[in-house]
Image (cartoon, rainbow, N blue to C red; front, side, top):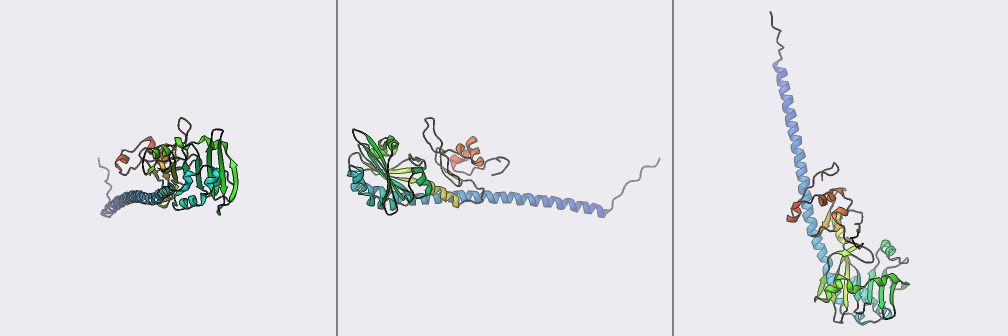
Length: 316
């Protein structure tokens, strides 16, 4: 019997096959290295941006607080502290507005009296704010007043234009439900000397997030305060976005969201008693960040970067 003839391949074909295999291996390796390198560069850049955002947010926040603290101290010396009626208090409005203008981050200032009377002067900077207050067209400032006596409590809103001319005055009975003496900023100021700062919370009137600087005055039971909204911190985050899809938030130690780079306003959820509270990661419609609430990253406590697993088929 004769064995079947062996198929012979030329040396040229063997070398060609070997070189093709080597080229495929080298190409695949280079592609893998390039992908890994790109991911590493993006991750490093994201970490650098995060650190820069924190530094800028702290710096800008301090620049906002310093003039606001000075404005509180100035307000605590004004004659409006001893005014006994709305009309008397309105006569001191020009000086109050000058004080408010000295703190660009402040949205409102107010005086809380020992008998429960309350006077608030507010900047109205946008149509949205005017709509929340149900203010007439042309409103630039709003005065919110509560007067209490033995017979009745009266809540009054006074709207003024940019020239401080009165546009409209309304009685708002529901506003008298607000009692400044029960608020955290009042009770803390009454038991401390100097300017006190509250934790961030949701404001009573406009449902925006912010904090209050307050100070007890030399007049018995009278406390002055200034509100600062946290929108400015959101503006800092938006300026730092690496890509259109970048998601960033600033949180406090309790994981409450103080600011967001999203163009969508932060939601205002309610607690078990139906009171508004600060949003948490779980309340946001941002899958990549909400996943951190479902599976918290242990690195956050040590202030190290935390890279979440892919969410909805996307890597973040």
